[in-house]
Amino acid sequence: MLVVIHYAEIGLKGKNRPFFEGQLLGNLQRVLDPLAAPKTVRSRRLYGRLVVELPDQVPFEEVSRRIRRIFGVAHFGRARSCAPQPEEIEKTTVELMTERRPESFGIRVRRIEKRHPFSSQALATRLGAAVQAVTGARVDLGSPDVWVDVHVLSDEALIRAEQIQGPGGMPVGSAGRIVSLISGGIDSPVASLLALKRGCKALFVHFHSHPFTSAASQQKVRDLVALLAQYQGRSRLILVPFGTLQQTLVQETAPGPRIVLYRRFMLRIAERIAARNGAHALVTGESLSQVSSQTLANVDTINRAATLPVLRPLIGLDKAEIIERARTLGSFEISIEPADDCCSYLMPRRPATRTRPAQLEKIERALDVEGLVEAALARIEEEEIHAAD
Figure 1 (tube, rainbow, N blue to C red):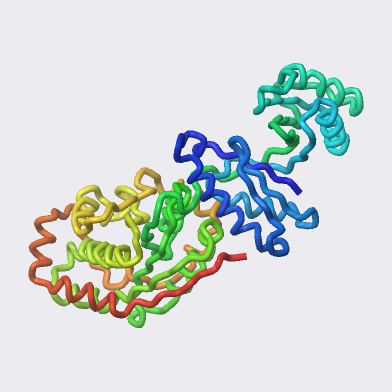
Figure 2: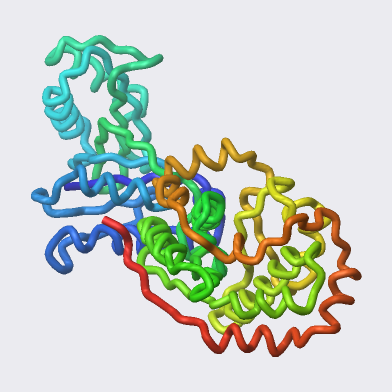
């Protein structure tokens, strides 16, 4: 089985394109290798496209399901290879279309190797006439049932009569490492997915209040990370006990700015974890003005606690858009399962909506900030999460 993979954005990378192609090839090998005997799945770069060869007995439905989760793939489809001579290309194309039997078709020819003694237009006309004569299908260059794409290379021609949409984006791992703060709610898994789509490799961090609350949020997060691992492979989850720190803040600070204080401590702890793991940014699921801690003033105050960039992929999306993306990911039903989490633990009645950095810095000067951060870091747990089936 021959599968041709096309990318989009990677083609704009100039001299850096081989790096991104290599990352994409590696990701394809990772998800496809388990489908066949060792060393029987082969991949190669070929003139702006990637080609994967698999044993014929591998079910294409499973191949397709896995490739559709590989960021960087624009579209793909099974193809046939033949010698780059017009008669061989015609024979292979007619065989393929005889099997497909569409009512209408179009032929698109691209000569990657220009030294062949025929033009793309002449070959397309020849192939169209041959297919029409054998199948009786009509030629439609506007909206045919099947497009036949013929790519003529130096040593072979590739003929493809199907195009399956990929997820787009950039290959996971090509942009570097991030720490993604994942709560178990609706928003943060979607934010994580969008970061993966831009090429990030995520280390997931979950803040919980167990044993002061149930451990249900931790299991939810495991399930969510297993979903996201379908897109980036085996993933690491760090569980941070946050309840004791919250209790200290309740005892020593006023209730109004307390949620913003929580968030500032979360960024400090996440940043330490990032430094230990070579990550270059933090990712959160915040959407501007969705809740009290996400007003522009509070986002500014929260940001001042971090030195690393804080990426917020959902910042301009409303709740309906986020829910739609969560449903597509498959995370929505998990996220809405009831569970106590650190966001609802010790929540003040009237959280402040317009804090100022100087106000929070004054409060924190009376706290043992470093001691609270180190105490939380000393009790973290790490787990390895495999992709959900």
